[in-house]
Length: 169
Image (cartoon, rainbow, N blue to C red; front, side, top):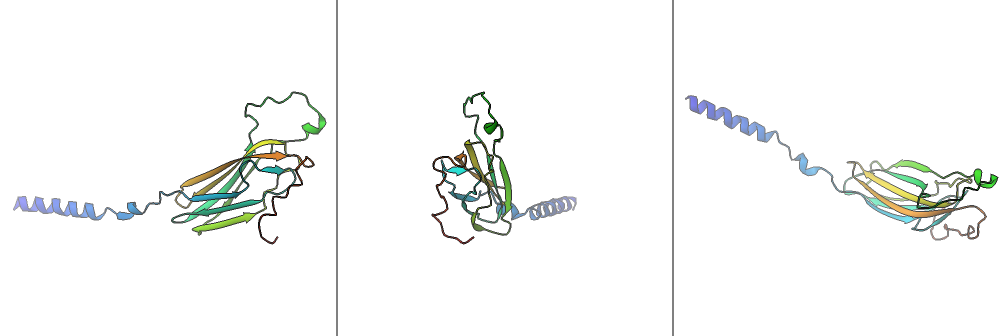
């Protein structure tokens, strides 16, 4: 009788132990979002004082969370700038931009805007333009572009990067 009782207790313990295991582990989202940065393109020249044509397609297998744009200088690319100073260059600053937008509740998004404005006093040179996309589960994808910021009034700043797309402002 004692053996049957011990066996019953072990069987019940095993049953409840296995029953408490959940199959939720099979539903964990481990897939990163898919990111297609259409604009700006690699090597794009952005002009100080003007807006950036930003065009992005994102999707996720479950749900998107947010996207962030980070623009920062790449001046340390083994560049040795002159130590000569003049008033015109002293007024220029390395441009930095960092902003996050929500994509909560969306599975796919086509994003197009001109909300990013390059400061008029942005120091010309090489920059990184990085887009991070995070899904609801925290999986992250990123796309990086090497861009150049040019001073307003430099040759080629009449280039209009906005003529290759359709939208109304």
